[in-house]
Image (cartoon, rainbow, N blue to C red; front, side, top):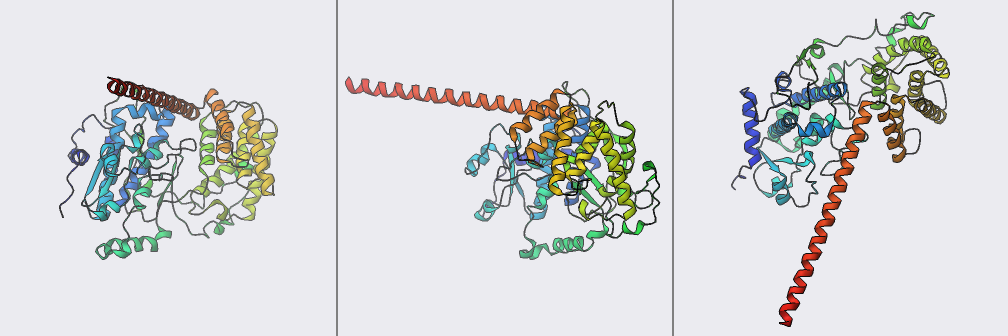
Length: 499
C-alpha cells in the first residue's frame, strides 16, 4: 500500500524544524527563539514539560508587562510562528511515540478529509491538525491531534475563556498532558516494550522524584516531593507568642534542587512588532539533571486562590485600617502557604502539629480583626480560608456563606482584586449558584477599576461579540442574495415558458 503523499504543511513543518536545528532564521521571525533552544528540544516527552514551564512563564510575564492580549498577539507574526513551531514540535514528539510519520493537515485538507468535524474558519487554534501513518483505514481511525489548542489554553485560558476542543470537551492544559493522552496502547504493542519498561520505572520512583505541576489558570509550581510524615517530625519547632516569630518553614522545608533553580534572565533575539514595544523578560529554567518521572498533577491550592495571593502582593490597594494586624497575620500564614505549596498532596492531607494549628488560628483571628476594621485585603484572605474550609467557621455551609460575604464586602469597596474574584465565584458557582450575568458584571467592574487581566478579558469578549455580529450580518446578506438570485431564475424560466 502506497504511503500518503506529503501535504503542504508537512513541508513547512520539516522546514521549521531544520531551520531551528541549524539556528537559521525562520521565515517571518519567531518569538522566544533563544528560550526554546534553552529548553533542550530532544523530541522526548520530558521536553514537553520544559515547554509547558516556558509557556507558563510567558503567560505570567505578558500579564505583568500589560500585553496579555490574545487578539493582538495572534496578529503578530512572531508570536504566531512561536505557537505554530511548538505545535509542529509536539507533533514530532507524538510521532516518535507512534513510531510513524506525522501528516499535517490545514483547514482545507481537514474539511475535505474529515467532513464530520465542525471547524470554525476564524479560529486560529483549529487551523491545523496532525495524524500518523499511511493513508489507510487503520490510520484514519486514529484521532487527530490539534496541538494549537493546549498551547492556546496554556497562554490564554481561564474560566472566562474555556477553550473547547474541536473533538469535544475541554482542551488539555499543556502539551505534555495533551500528548500523553494520545500515546499508543503499549499493552498491545510488543515493539514498544522499552517504553513500557520506562513507564513502570516512572511509577516505581514516583515518590522520590521532582515534578512540574501545571494548572488551567495560569501558574506553574515547581515542588519537591516529601514523605507524608515529613511535617509531623517537626513538633519541636518553637512557636512564640508574637505572630511574626512563628517560623514553620526554616527547619523543615527543603530547598529546590539545582535542576529547578531559576537563574539569570534571558533575552529573546526575535524581532519585535511595533505594537509590542518590549517583549517581557523571561527567567531561564535550567534543563533537569535527571528526567522528571512524575506525571503532571493538580497543585494543592485551587488556581483562583493561588492567583488571589499573587494579586494581594502585586496589586496595591490603599488601606486605611487594620494594616498592622494584616501584616502580622500574613507573616504566619505565608509560611503555611509556602509549606503547603511544596507538598505532593491535597491541602486537606497536610498534617500540622497542635502548636502550628494554634498559631494559624491566632493569625486568622488577627486577620478577622483587620477585616472587621475595613481592610479589604484582610477580607479577601479571610474569605479564601473560609471558602477552603480552613477558616474560623466550623460548619462548611456557613463557612462558604461567610467567605462569599467577605468577598462581596470587599468588592463593594471597589477593590478590583475582590471584584475579579467575585466574578470567578459567580462563573464557577463556588459558594453560590452559578450566575453568568453577575460574573460578567463583576468582571466589568474589576476592569473599570484598573484590573489588567479583567480589562483584557472584557476587551476579548467585546471583540468576540463584534465578530459574531459581523458573521450573522454576512450570513443574512448571503441569504438575501440567494433568495434574490432564486427569484430571478424563476422569473427567467417563466419568461421562457411564456415565450
